[in-house]
Length: 414
Image (cartoon, rainbow, N blue to C red; front, side, top):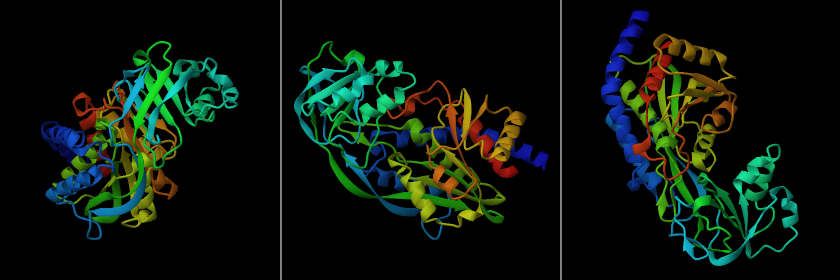
């Protein structure tokens, strides 16, 4: 058995380094391109991506489940697809580079006074004023200085408990963008400190937004095994879409995980002998809106969840020079031990970290349903997240093939 596994590993290595990384790059380049508009719903790009994934499944001869590759479900999203204009004292800022507006922003076409918050800890006093024509300006560094109460104060401002027309948070680095299902009655704007004129007095904002209902879809397929149980690889293919005139490429989050699942599907489909277990591949939509696709799948499973021996969710696996982290690893020490043994033997990754379970990706609904599920992400110097700079040409993929090898060997030993 060991000799067979070693031969498989050698064969896998020659294929991976010459072909698989090229395929992964091609997938990530495609998913992160302007053609797919950030892989969300307001432009219909989620459906374009779904067709792309299914075309690859068919090309690889990955079989549909119950006669279909698709599982449709509904969601809502507040869409901001028209161009946004934001000016500070008449100076126009550039979206994505100078500022980000969070996705619950309502339609606004007006100018507002700027009021600076010198002591963010006393935010309750601000709530006594009439701020309906005012944007509050708070410095993120000041918020961070309140170490013990930092998160509580930040939450007060992001939730606008002062009932202002809007909140401006000044940062050294643009914050991440966050989409929302529904509008709120204020705008939350993160502005780069260097782009914000000193002692500015007026902010002007022109933005159109509208809530819409969409039908989107999970995509799945499988490779039959010798035993009627499943090992499942999952990733979410959706991302943030567009914000006015900009789009979010989402190379690391999560074109990288999607590419790895598709690459694993390609490999298992081309095996000369069937795998031990059925190998299922699920690509979720709706993750960025709150794990909606994985929740729907768990509530409407395409196969018996009790047949799942192991589920590995892959989200943000585009780096790895500092190793990987296994979320839900503390709850599954035997799985972690298998992974560490493989890594020690073949010296694939520099470090394997472990975290307790958290509702931070699509593994989570499965764990609540009693499925043995882990979530793996890579760690490294690449830090882009929910920004316009998470681009395919910047993604290193420096431990992509090593992680993929580890997962392949894991399925052989499980």
